[in-house]
Length: 329
Image 1: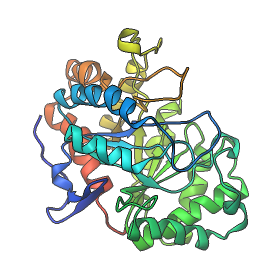
Image 2 (image 1 turned 60 degrees about the horizontal axis):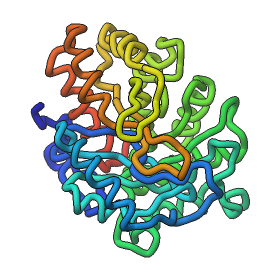
Image 3 (image 1 turned 180 degrees about the vertical axis):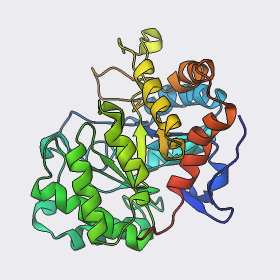
C-alpha cells in the first residue's frame, strides 16, 4: 500500500522514540496491546522479564511489519502493564513506530484507578498527564502519543466523568488525541462529548474505542457526523496457530459497519485495529494482529472497497487522528 497521509505535511506524532512526521506513520494499527498485565493486580510500571519479552515479541512484530504495518499504537494504560522503556526497546529492534499513552483506565470496575485519582480534581490529574508529555514517563525521556482512559458500563460515574474532564484539559495543553474505552455505551459516549464541549474541545479530539460492540450503527454514524473518530478495533478470526486462541470471527460484523460508513460518506472518521495482545499475563491467550492484513483487507476488496478507500482508513485517518494538535470548538 502507499503511505499517503491525510495529515498536514508539518504535523507530527509522538512515538516512544520521539516525534516523527505524521506522514511517516504508514499503515497503522490504532489499538493493540504489545505488553499487558490486565487481570493481575495493578502495578506501575508493569514488570516483565525483559529478555523473554524481546525473544517472544520481536519476531512476531517483525512478521506484522512484513505485512506492511509501520506503526502500532499500544493502548496498555498506566497500572495494568505500561512499560515504556521496554516499548522503546521493541520499537528500536523492530523498526516499527510505537505510540504509548498517558491517562488512567477507569473501566474494569475501577480496579486500575489509583487512590490519588479519587481524591484529586480533574485539574490535578491533568497536570500529572501533562507532565508526562512534557517531561517523560516512568523516569524516562519517552513521552505519550495520546491519552488513554476508560469508563465503565452505564451512565458515567463521578470518577469516570472526572477522568474524561481531565483528559479534555490535557488535550487543551498538549494536543494529544483522546482514546476512551467506551464500547457499547452510546449514552456514555454522548456524556463524554458533552464534557468535551464544556471544556471547548472538539469531537475530532475524541475516539469512541471498541465502537464495533455497538449494534446500532446509527449511533456511531451520528457521532462520526459530529466529527468523532470511530474505532472498530475488535477484528478476530478463529486462529489456533502459534499460541493464539481466538475461536470466533468478527469480520462480517466489521464489514457491515464499514459498509454503513461508506454509504454515508464517513469513511474518513473510521479507525481499524484488533485489540490484539502479544504478551499477556500468564494463562491468558494471545490475540493476533494480522487479521486486518491477511483477512479483512481482502474481504474489503471483494466487497468493492477501492484501494483509495482502504488507504483512507488504514493510513490517512490514523495520521490525521494522532497528529499532535489542539482541536477546539
